[in-house]
Amino acid sequence: MDEATFWAAQAVLDAPGRAPGRKSVRRHLLTGLAGCGKCGNHLAGSYRTDGQVVYVCKACHGVAILADNIEPILYHIVAERLAMPDAVDLLRREIHDAAEAETIRLELETLYGELDRLAVERAEGLLTARQVKISTDIVNAKITKLQARQQDQERLRVFDGIPLGTPQVAGMIAELSPDRFRAVLDVLAEVVVQPVGKSGRIFNPERVQVNWR
Image 1: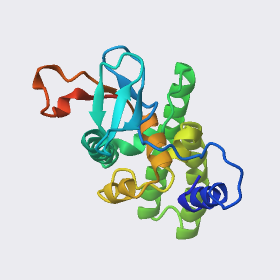
Image 2: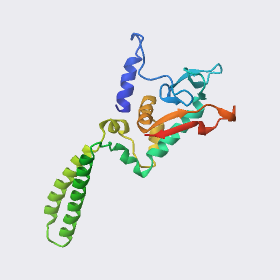
Image 3: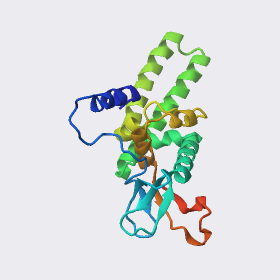
Image 4: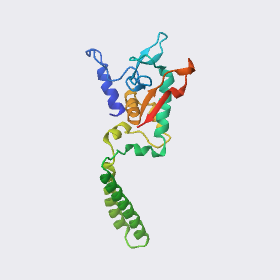
């Protein structure tokens, strides 16, 4: 769902006179997403007496972390990961059938070789520009179909419109709606928050563990 569609739907949900019900946007960004490093359950957001949002494990009450401490870290880590050159590979699904994966790889390798051959034959005057264009279009169409077989539709939806592998990704991540960011984070990694430990009241960023999927 793109941003425009998301907010259009949210406007309907928030419209005056609409019967009360659960909203599609969660009140706290990481509720049910961040895991407890002590008992394995999930953290839930709530408000402290001073008004600050804190994520607490409601199961063991052994882990708590301020939203202002963990959320900026996760936005930074996600943006940093998606800006890496290999981020485009995140769109490729895991093909569990090894034979299928190898078949696709070999077919793509053959087609890329075909493009190289066309370029050489054009340079040597063996083909006209029109012949090369027609042949290239046919080969590229085959490549596109094969690449589509490697792509996970869910990942395509989550990352739609995000300029993976570019510096511009940071600005895009910062502008995502809370639910969209949750979806991106959930696809990328598992987040676990460890107990305070010996650091006491001083926040230790190492408490936030990100395990890439």
